[in-house]
Length: 76
Image (cartoon, rainbow, N blue to C red; front, side, top):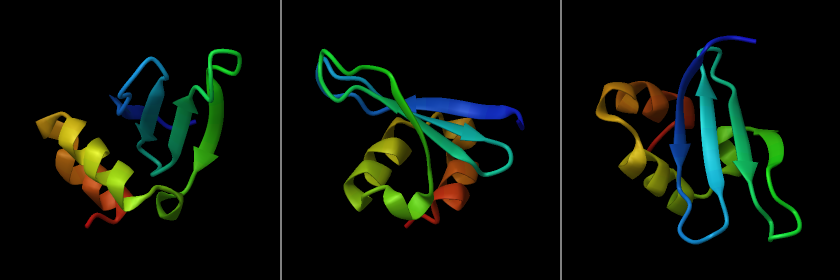
């Protein structure tokens, strides 16, 4: 596994939704479906992330990682 670049949370309520970006351009998503199904982990491709969520990820991204994350997400 390559090194982690950063974690970006786009949680809007009590359900978690976090994206973890890695140096090898891989993306891991950790999220809660509901209170009984939490910390669901999946490896995803940029095309699986909605435009709305990409907007939120970039908005919440630390400035020093923004350019790199935008490249991984093929954003905009």
